[in-house]
Length: 191
Image (tube, rainbow, N blue to C red; front, side, top):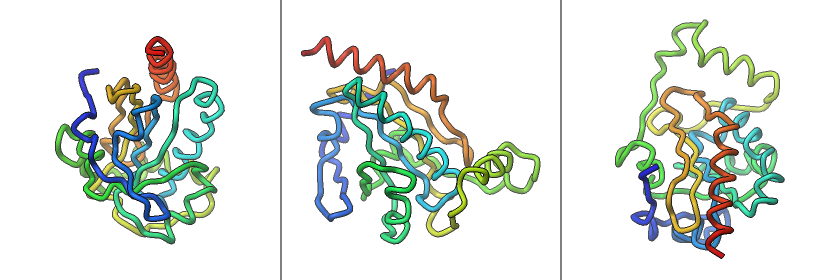
């Protein structure tokens, strides 16, 4: 994949404790899986985040880090999201710089149109998620900024990128793991 995150090296991410880090700190010392969340209260986002978080033991064995990034920080929503649906670090992408990577320089926007059809893939995913997620809400911006997943090699090269083009569109977990294994192998070869 021809995407490198070097231009995000100085992008500011803010942690729950208000400590700020620069983007490059996520991949300077190890490969990292980055979940770019659309909305912490969303039933679909919570469901997918918990499924991705379940991969953590495998990523730990391979030496690959995991972080979640949100584009808006609503403290109550982030507090409800962690640790119930994501047990690790959550950062606020203040300038939406990471989200712009998903759209090739622009933030990817969503649409409510799929929800007009009760038989759409989006509604199907909501019904499936309701089996796993009981607590959810509609607080926050879930339309103007879509999410995705990045698997980033040590140094900032993106090995895998999934862009949520419609609400609830998720990445194939086998593809995520394949990319994770590849970045782990690259990191080991760099030692």
